[in-house]
Amino acid sequence: RAAPMAVLLETSKGDIVIDLFVDDAPKTCLNFVKLCKMKYYNHCKFFDIQKDFMAQTGDPTNTGRGGDSVFKFLYGEQARFFEDEIHATRKHEKFGTVSMAPAAENANASQFIITTRAGAVDALDGTRTIFGEVSEGMDVLRAINEAYCDESGRPWQNIRIKHCVVLDDPFDDPPGFAELVPDASPPRKEDPDDDRLEDDFDVNAEMNKDEAQIEEEKRGREAHNRAVVLELIGDLPDADAKPPEESLFVCKLNPVTTDEDLEIIFSRFGKVLSCDVIRDFKTGASLGYAFVNFEHKHEAEQAYFKMDNVLIDDRRIHVDFSQSMHHLWKNFKRFGKNGGTEEDFDEADGKSSRGMKRTFQGAGRTFEIKSNAMGHISGGNARYAMVQDNKSAGKRDDKHRDRKYSHRDKDERRDRKRDRSRSRDRDRKRDRSRSRDRDRKRDRSRDRERGRDDGRSRR
Image (cartoon, rainbow, N blue to C red):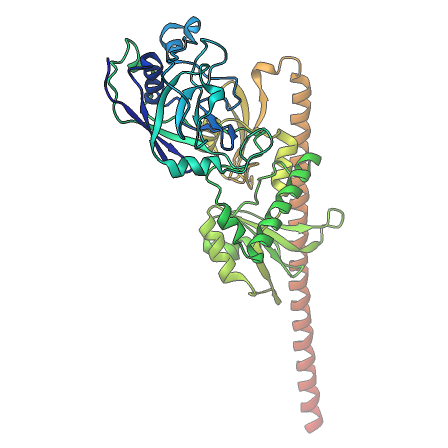
């Protein structure tokens, strides 16, 4: 069927309209327009640009070795390629001529080229099927031709076909074709080995950055690189891990200030999940700083604004958001980097309660609920950690059981040590109170004796 047909290509550089020669190359035009309707060309790069010669695209692998015709999707692998439709009257004689880029003779698939030479390109005549020409968007094609490329013709900044719009399609859809057309454009596949600037990178904006912005971005990259190194050596659970936003660091504390005192003071701002005054592990004496962990971020923010420079036990304390990764690192070292799935987390979150430790079975795993956890490895509020996978625990049951009992013993020893520390604090307070009472009684007794002596001397 002969009828005018046009396709609009939306590229990174702008829009290009291609008029197709349906009479001279009907099968090639059918293949091209149906691939456009399948969104097959979306995100394809112009991977080979030879200045003043041609620009090649249409390969989803962006290597020049891939691409399939629409007939493969309809009829199978044996129909991947189709034959040439070369006419002696059609020449590459003008800027913007569109022709196929076959893998060999009669091996056309999806790749095509657009000539970028103002005159004739005789070297391409007789070997490629010419099926269209650019009718609009000549300035866009010139911009593609002027792209800065390496020696192999690959642009240093990617140029992509973002979308294809079929303006006029005179061909009926083949049977089964409707099932091949997706509802939306497929997501762009990121190549981790791609060292080129992406098509949405603004070169002009990058060149106009001031020194402060450049220095800030440089420091950000350096900080991330240091975090990656810490992750590699095992000091961080993850390079992108962040301290929990609900935790506060309190310092300049009086040695007599206890965990209970701080918890009572800070509980006016919200529910305090944990409050730990850090002590010397040998003597149990306070080191003058503590960590207060709230249930919600806004509660920690209120406490930060209200409690900084407040007087507690004759000391003006300093309050700041915690930057410690200790608890995250500890969970990572004990339970690994994964810690279960999102469904496991939801189930654990529903079963957890403050001040309790228990295990439950779910999704083929055994989990331990830990209500005082400060966060999981990605910076959130994890309340569980995966202890073991029942499917792979056959050979390691004894090892995991010993490890679990070892962790339980450590937790019990830590709890007993904390109880002893708190008991010593209470004893010190009680001793100080008794000492003050004795001093007051002694002072009152001396005052009475002085009064009696003064009365006798006056008589």
